[in-house]
Structures are given as structure tokens and as C-alpha cells.
Amino acid sequence: MRHWRHKPIILAATLFALLLGLPAHAGPFVLLDVGSGRVLAHEDAFQRWYPASLTKLMTAYVVFRALESGAVQLNSPVRITQNAAKEPPSKIGYPQGSVLTLDNALKIFLVMSANDVTTAVAESVGGSEEAFVARMNGEARRLGMTDTRFINAHGLPGPSQYTTARDLAILVRALRTEFPRYAGYFSIEGVRNGESVKENTNFLIGRFDGADGMKTGYICSSGFNLVATATRGRRTLAAIVLGAHSQVERAELAAELLARGFKAPGLGGPNIASLRPSGQTTAAVADIRGEICTQEAVEQRMKERDDQGRFVLTSPHVHPMQREPRVVAVGLGGAMGEEPAKPRYADVPIPTPRPDYTPQPVAVQQGG
Image (cartoon, rainbow, N blue to C red; front, side, top):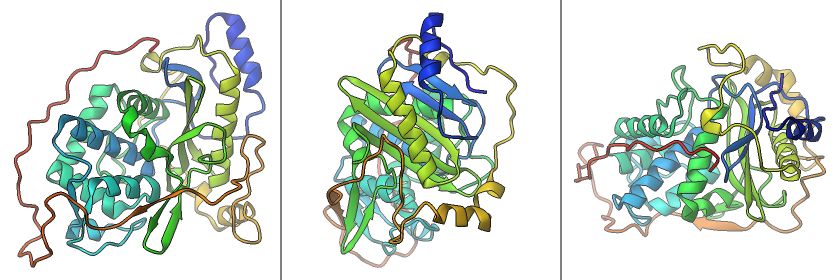
């Protein structure tokens, strides 16, 4: 059942009519007005779900906090350790000992979703992967993400790593409102690493009017997840879509939510921080592997491609990109104080002084 909570009643009826006819979707979603913090629509917003690479949104949040505190800079070095280099795909494959800037690392893990670079960032910014994950969980608590737990920085699956659509909406709003200067990282259309070009897997970037972020995620157990943001005029909306059955489905549902949201008034509805479950919730994390990674499901997804293997979106809100994607170049080198490559006796980062890090309480904002 979809839940529409708006006041007055006439506003609820308006939104309900606007949002009829959404594509069939069994997973959770939230449509959020980022500026006001109001929830325009939601379904199963409190169902625990595997975030997959949406985890990297919290990784970025922790990095942005470190940048703002002065603990690191965009040209600070990120070293690929043995631990980082052995992460499974998606990965960029830089050899152990390689050094890149934090700026390039952000572009790589937010667009290419490279798990090896994400782990290297966690180790470089946090001192160790474990310390960085502790920061992630600390920030989740501080922000009011009451049903989220992280066990790594990249989102590879584990039974103790979960979140909800509601909690992700809180994180998205924090990213957009606290760190507008870094918003450009989420709207990159593609990255070039040498001769290789990787386009953003958020199909709305460059194809949906006003699309400006944020991140995709996929593992068999979660299905195809997407956080998509768009800005028109002074209004920014965010669609959090979890558990889609394909890349096309998640993009088209997010586009439909956003398009209809822009037609609706930005008033009424609960604040995301005060949203409460409307029914029973369970501690179990949803696992839809049996719907996603069967041969039948794979064959069905192949039907969403044309003869050249390109995805075909039929949504009236998504238009073909009539130009080449705008890509940014990434690569190794350029880091501040980068040391020349030399033998290392152990793959243990050399401790460096860091300021104490204690997440501070944050006031809950009602209505923006």
C-alpha cells in the first residue's frame, strides 16, 4: 500500500491523483522535497534493505566533513594499499602503492563505484578502514538515521549492513544542504581513466530535465537501487528507489516520481525526520536475490537493450542524450606531498596526527 500523508486533505487528494499510474514496483521508495524536508510520497520507507553502493553516499559525507574540518584537502594523497587492491569488483585496478588525489578518488568511487578506491579513501581519511566505518555509523546516528548500520565503506554485502529508504532520504538531504559546494561530484556524466571511459550509471544525468545527482547501487540481494535528485528553479527533489528489477526500471520510476513531484505543491506532508511507520516493521533485511539473479531475470533485462547493447528507456520524462557525455579525466599522481614509490616492509599506514573526531548533536529541522 502506498502512503500519502498531506495536510490539508485536498492536498492529499491532489498528490494521490498525480501519482497514480506509477510503474509497478515492489520495493521501497521515498520522494522528498530537499529544501523543506517534506515527504511527498513514500512506500515501505522503514523496510530494512541492503544499500549496496548507495553506502558510498555516507562515505562521501564523512569525507566532506573531513574536508570542511581541514583534516584533509582535495589534493591530499590516497594510497592504494594491499587491503584496498584486493577488493572485488567494481574496481579501477590501480596497483598496490599507487597514489592519487582525494579529488580524483571521489570522482572515481562516486561515478565508477570502484570498491578498491573507496577502501583506500576510508583508510587514508580515517587512518584505518575500521576507524572510518566507525565514523560512518557515528554520523548516521547524529543525523537521525535510526535504522542504518555500516560494516564497510563500499557497500559489498553483509548481513549486518542495512539501511532504509527513510534513512537514505535523511542522508541525501544532509549532503545537499550541508555541502552544496561538493554537489558537482554527483552530477558527473562520466570519467576517463587513460583510454577507458565509464559513463554514470544514473541514466537520468543528462537525460532528465534538471537531473543533478546522485548514486546507483546494485547487488543481487538488494536489486537495483537509485538515489536521483533534480533541481528546477529553486526547488530540489530527491527520489530514493530500492529493489528495482533492472537499471531501466529504477531510472524510469525515479523519473516518474520526480516529474510528478515537480507538478505538485511543495507543501504539506511530514518532515522526513518525523516520518513514522504506518504498520508493522520487521528486523529482517529484505533479500530479493531470487527475483534478481535468476537466468529468467537476466534474460528479461537483456530485452531492455537495443541491438547495440544500449539501454532503451521509454519514459516520456527521459530524453536521449543528443551529444557525447561530458567526461572528466582522472588518474594517478598530483597529490600533495606525494612520496616516490619505494619498497614497504608492511602494508600498514604510517600514523599521522589527526584531530579528535566526535560527531556533534544536530538539531532536527521541521520544514526546512
